Image 1 (tube, rainbow over the protein chains, first blue to last red):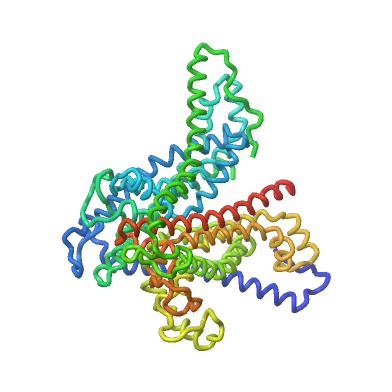
Image 2: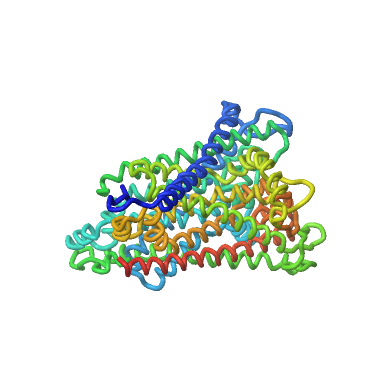
Length: 294
Length: 326
């Protein structure tokens, strides 16, 4: 892209301003990348030391305040179960909401209200989602702290992301496909089930993976729903569990170096899980992209 | 929006299994409508249950909820939101001031400056910033950023101490509002950059090319054709970022020193926020303490709701405008 016209030279002042802004824009980008590199570097260099078999296979049970050793097995199990349960709750609701918005809503008042509040819901702070589940599930219904309660809070945070991405993917399905299906006498719901959803499938999977990656790192809602434990609890429906983000938060707040080391390794494990999910999601999207004719 | 206005419900009803078909049709329509209604119900339920569980604690409060600068619901049953709300607003506002110019620069870089082929991967790099969990930023902030900012903080205090924000005596630097705001800024930068980038990319190509054809430099083209078009988008992106920063919990819970006063001296260790207080106080709270935290969560919910609805309002208005223009 050349900007000179050859008719008259651009004055020095204008050229200077252009270069100045260009430098600022490059600087802004560099500034934004610095923290990313710094975070990743510190997490890897500090976390690798304790990323051993013991960390991955042991809990913190019986580990004293100053002891080295111990691990995050209980937290990893907890995170995997909570995120899985959260997906089981939020994906059907999110997907059906997207189907309503695209296929049934037709721009009516209800669909506009849902659409608006899905957007607003994206902005609900995670700590508020946790407090809500605490107030509703634990105070109002009298249930106990459990992985399930945490999954409920995470599901609230996942839903809007799932709805938005699924909606976007459903809208990308060409209308010709739907009309061809109707022309063959196929009813609307079977068209959605057999034509629209399979066409949008990979895109929806990508969106769900990104939503999962987003909530897997959430700490605040777990504090007041999953609560806390140092022991392995494989049952998400009974008693307090642990989560990997919670583990990092807990260990980071302790004064001993041994605990902070564990926090770094926990952070590394968490980032590896989240980045892996992200990467898989992007790969699915990328692998899918040419088929959409982009 | 109206992608399927031509389609009608159901297909032609001329098959043997018509009854079964309408059955499935009804069920499917019911399920998808119900899912949407469930979403609305959840939003309503959040408000209802936060209010109902906050009321007992607010009744038991022996202080002034909106006036007092203390938070002792567990012992003396006196708690007030003032200092916390102030901390939430000030820290997010500072984060916004730091993040917005950089985010706009990043967005411009990706939409108009970076080599075409590199633009998408570089954009992905910025998105990765958003993929780092909040607790990791907290850990990074406490162990790395807080010590790193000590010297610049002291320099600012020494040389620009006349400016109220940089004033203060005694301990300068450490776990301060400033350190927390920098971490918040890093965390909200990706969302502001992503939305701004989308808006900048949508700027009418014709106007850009016309500006260039008239001999404008790249910056003049951006100033005349891209920025005016993108301004509402950038404003709403910043508001969404503000909402994010206000609700951000764990990172600031690790960094803020949990004091209960109102201080504009961002370089001294006086800082707290509603969300950080909930995270730090929940573990040892009794019944009234938890009720008090729920009450503060309700305040946070209302503030973020207003900010987000405002942002969405701006975006939606722009969408209509863009559609008319297209």
